[in-house]
Amino acid sequence: MRYKLGISFIIICLTFLYACKKKDTTPTTTDTTTNVPTGDLKFHLHTYIGDQEVDAYNIDYPMPDGRKISLNMAELYISEIQLVKLDGSLYNVPSNGVLKVFESEGVEIGKVPVGNYKSVRFKVGLTPDVNTLEPTTTGYVNLLNQPEMWFSTKAQPDGYVYLNFSGSIDTTAAQTGVHVPFEYKIGTEDNRVQIEMPAQNFSIFKDAVGYVHMKIQYDRLFDGINLSNNANLHVITKTDNALPIVETLKKNMQKLFIYEN
Figure (cartoon, rainbow, N blue to C red):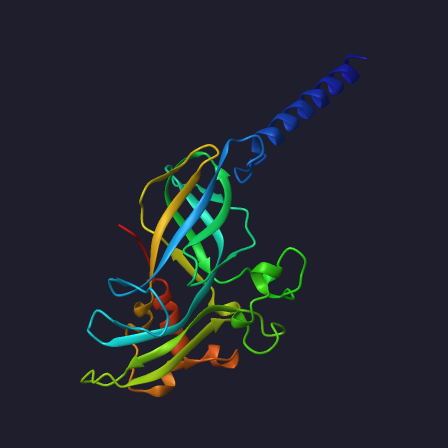
């Protein structure tokens, strides 16, 4: 009888210890805003060439080296947005992605927890699951039914253009003002680009709108590109997105975003 009682006692103890251990090691998530005070987060994004804000399409603007450039398209997708907390941990903002068009500077990101943050992270592009959706998918029409962000007359099967940037640029060594057209349509699974913004504190307050102010300095896309080679000025199709020049463009895309002073 004592032997049976001893075995029962050991089983009870082991069960209790296992339950305690299981509870202690269960990870918790900080990505929910349930029962947490929230505010609205917006990105305020300005289109720039050098130190000048672009006011309209089809107007010449000087790049930092004096070279003139004119734009007729400057749009991009942003997704996988994360807020960096003061302790370095991350909050994943619930979002299907947003489209930044030239005509609108304010981009609504969504509701996020009240608090102090030191930076933001995001990707230029769409998540793999969203990139495969038809543009008429319920809940995604406003985001995806944008023909200028397709590689052809249909969105699928090629997926979406993550960055559409086109216009004309003076490619002459003497900067004579003679423009030639350029067009970059960057997309495909391999060409999402991670953006890591430096530390710059901002706060979100309850039931208020908090802004992160940034410039998109598009002339930086041309850093290190030989403009005299016309082949370097055109990435238009899904097939073109495998060209070597795209690797340079992706590195340059990481430098496009800077905080507005």
